[in-house]
Length: 72
Image (cartoon, rainbow, N blue to C red; front, side, top):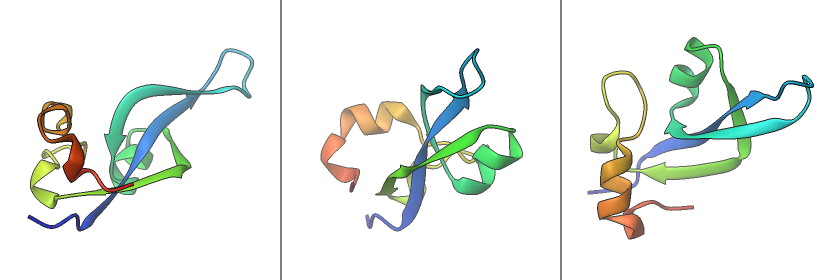
């Protein structure tokens, strides 16, 4: 399995409209934008494409099970 898919942390604006807070998800650029969320560009990582679910987000159970497969 190759780390061939770029993924990013999902963030949103805080109540003040400026503070960015992570929401504990990783996803593809397309999925994050589609859902109206924002990308933490500094969080670029790579994972196997098999870890991406049909909605474009990383299965975090696989990340927990195989943490060394996520390339930062």
